[in-house]
Image (tube, rainbow, N blue to C red; front, top):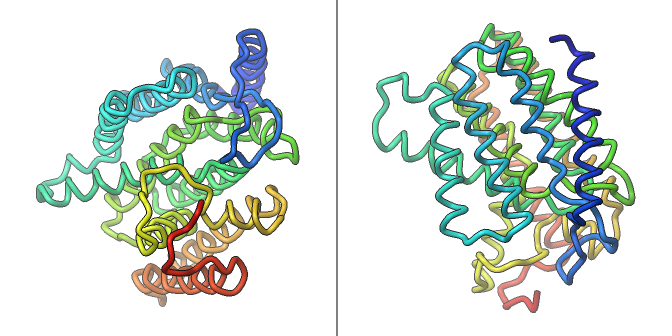
Length: 327
């Protein structure tokens, strides 16, 4: 299967999903926490599933576990989009998908300590939740995921790894581009929903864990640096205010910039993707330079991002305080 075949398949599955979604009114209805104002088709991230399943006849068996993890995560997210699943069932299925992603990344093929396995599980589950929480404005998840997928392919070629087979790469890239056409616009035609954000979160966790596992270098955590700092920073901010961190909110940095400060959704989304692309490019250049220790990048990058996050919270958004928010 070449790239053109995947382009045609992505177009076909997207067209079919949009027809079905309109017929059965699978829509996102705005509420007080929404960053949009119109009824919009949701759950379009489901198209990742048939695209991946189309690759099975030409894949090696080592990629089946990854596809199983992505399908379980994506289908569970779609079921939650439609039915609002009970939390315990949702978490059980997400945990299964996360466990499969860890297996697909090759961690269990090495003799690792039990606490490393638990840490990998926590990181993977945290990555999935981060993608889910950060998917709140047009374009942000898709542009961010596109940066990661393309970066992963470069690292794979540069380091001569075999994490991702070519058909899966083609399927991901083409479906992300098609969904970008629907979502990366001022008034989105469709949202990827939990079906898409959970799928992308599981894939991102697989990619990062796989790179760390193959290279024995934790620096690849910075492939999720921008999302991670915003997500963790917002949790810490809410903890200082003694708020329930499990309750719904609109306090993430990207939400404050788009909703409270009036910056356009696409400007904020593109900024997040661009900063992450810049970080990934620096990592790529450092890998190519034998004189640079890539281990330095991890604390340096996270330190700079945290500093920028705090400065923006204090001087631009002006919501950094120790008093309880009304949000």
